Image (tube, rainbow, N blue to C red; front, side):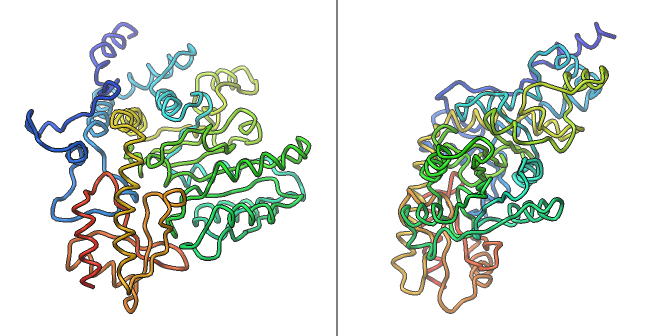
Length: 441
């Protein structure tokens, strides 16, 4: 049986590893001719199988898979279809021996991408799952509070509400800015300083708000919290937790650049990773504050269980929910990190900001448009929110789709705006087409 398994793994090895691309080499779609005259961003768009009948300004919702990710998913899926038991047993055998596995490979890829350590990452299925795991497991003493914002998404607010229901943890919401279009770093930092109290144990914030398109100055906020922590004992330390999904894969930043303690993001939005994948990063001290919610499936955890001991191991993986997952998607995650790295993270950030600046400048020139997202790239990213005077936002989105084949979206909040999010799926010409369509309305 062992010989057969090893023979099978040898034959399937190339498929299990999936495609790899050298640093700095942009993959070119197979359908493009060798002497293609397309510019770089046209070649990037050619990696996606988008419906050419529509202009997609909602790529951040549930991202399409670029070709390298599709190929990696297919390779892993084919290997599992041929003999899932052999593949899974091989991974468990490697895990029991303390060796790297396909389950740990995404952590290694994420660590390289974000300049962190592989053991600092837990794998999840989405941002929402990550938020639920972190906020349900965070050790918060009696009388302490979680301070969040009124601008955060349902997933953060509901995860914290459920935690409050379970054990009475106090949750308080602060307002970081009054008018999105006039926001400033000074306003945000001033409100944060004023709202943090003696009982604040966790500050829960979001890097890029999908409600307004505002990008918070996370490093400046982290600096405020670090300064306050210098005057506090270990038991009173404030922990900074960030939902980073709409900056992840969009902004060229590492964990050290951001300075937060915990970072949570789905990988199937701006990163264009496999659908149903996500991660949680935290440094060791922060992981020590989080109790796992779902048992981990690792060799060390199983061995500890058999020996009636407390499990130990890479702290991120100990917080990775066990059970059987859509492994072909999770194992294909390194291909998404490679795809972005090969294009160039700084270039991706520059491209997204360039297209959104073009969009915002065009909208600002329209007298009946009220732009809510700041013009300043330091306070905005890839989402642009606006309203059109005299037409409900729901109707704006409907007309853009029906009359112009432009896919826009609505902010899923109590206050609704129209959103357009140009990125790697769109061109400058398509941004101009979207502006012409809004002007026609």
